Image 1 (cartoon, each protein chain N blue to C red):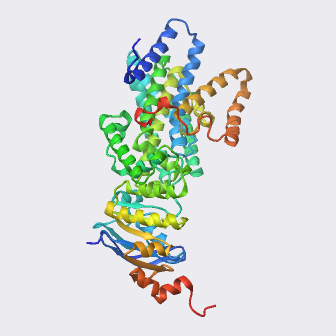
Image 2 (cartoon, each protein chain N blue to C red):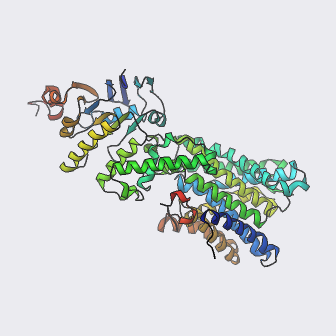
Image 3 (cartoon, one colour):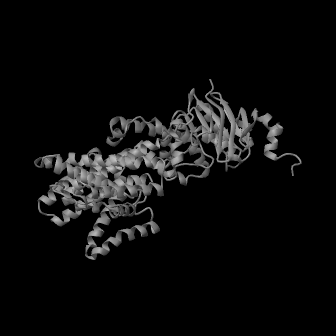
Amino acid sequence: MKEIPSFLRYPLLLVALLCLSWGLPASGLMNLYIQQVLMYVGINIILTLSLNLVNGYMGEFSVGHAGFMAVGAYVASLLTVAVFPREWGFLLFPVVLVGGGLAAALAGLIVAFPSFRTRGDYLAIVTLAFNMIVKSVLENIDAIGGPRGYMGMAKLTNLVWVVFWVLVTLLVLRNFIYSNFGRGVVSIREDELAANLVSVDTPRLKIYAFCLSAFFAGIAGGLYAHLLQFINPRSFSILKSTDMLVMVYLGGIGSLTGSILGATLFTILMELLRPLELWRWVVGPLLLVLLMIFRPTGIMGLKESRWVKPASERL
Amino acid sequence: MALLHISDLSHRFGGLQALADFFLTLEGGSLVGLIGPNGAGKTTVFNLITGVYRPTTGRIMFAGQEITGWPSHRIMAAGLGRTFQNIRLFKDLNALDNIRLGAFSHYGYSFFQALCRTASFRRQEQQFTSRALEMLDRFGLRKYAQTPARNLPYGEQRRLEIARALMSRPRLLLLDEPAAGMNQAETVALVKLLRELWQEFQLTILLIEHHMGVVLDLCQRVQVLDFGATIFDGSPQEAQQHPQVLEAYLGKDGEE
């Protein structure tokens, strides 16, 4: 048999993945529970990839990622329920998600500007405050349900969409990271002063990194809202942000492969631990503490598997 | 017209006058040394020129533009390169990435072009990568292209830092003690390299150096600082004889 030409390998692989994510559920080979878990895995991969850009590549410590997810979830839900007619919902789903993502990216600016002057622990506090502010604001706007939450979204999220957005996130973040901008972002982590002194425009890069990261968190929020068909402010608390941190540091900072690995392992682990009920919530923070002590760089720390790098970087 | 013209520059850290009434004029193509005992304010001058500190008073003109108060990245993009006393490479990045970052401000593609890897993006990436590899070749560092900077031997790290500064094709290169921590043979090689680079890249160089041999070999002119004040400006040979310079380095006769 003739070998598949190299420039077609990746597109073919992506199409195959999308077909599988449609075919397996449609043919009844995959039950609803497995589908549900896989969709959670996918949403968590998007969240982990996006958080890794700020925490892993840029070396800041953002602990409020759930805040961006919340903005995306609420804006996307409002768009499907209150703005667009219901019967168009299916067609407009990508638009709705991008809308949520853009709103989250705008919120990313709120964190990007303080980051020009603050870093490390102090910036972590800014992000923490951001998360809390978003949650309190949502709890206090009665028009969107306040603390009772918001519902009425159709179940638009399915496995195909989740797989599609995972691939988009992976591709876009990879393209960013393996560019002049991405290298600049990493140079901020390595030595911000030296970065400035080789002409790296650090404020601009911080805006790019925070907004891009927030955008995909917003997309994940929209997918999440249209999967559960119900959101409430409590689902976007610090606890949620902590889960994301665990996934990033488990998989490995500064690694796309690591993010995928971390999100997958953690989501499946939490699913297996369901019988533990309340005690399950001890696992995440405990895992974070242990990781920080014994393996602060995670499974893949700063390493990348060959297959995610662009061909031009595989020397 | 002078490439760099600094007038009446001073800087205070709280109660400490780190630099006072500093004047410096660099003609294009000159190679000038800035010397003086520890704590004389030499690195402060570099930090003021490159925008790390904001001067308390004074003006810095570079290539006909006033750059006082600009953010560092803008100053560097205007045509300056700098190395550090204690090497500041991006240690987890390989030599190739370190070098490519040197040309950061020269990349012309936009954020969205990068996200989509457009044809123009790929062309520029290719162009800068091959330029970076040439630069690594020039410095004999090609074999370290994929090696994290932290794993390079000390002398190679020093050279990589100079190569990174040159990637932006600067007109003015500021070298902060390039021979620090080098032995005699390495120092001789460095002097030779610097003289070659000075001609090859048509540079203007301002050099801080403790090693008098390096200064005597390289510099056409030296300016001597002591406690933030300029005490001598002239040829390096004369500086060695100048009573105030000797006093600054060795102490006054009969003081102890």
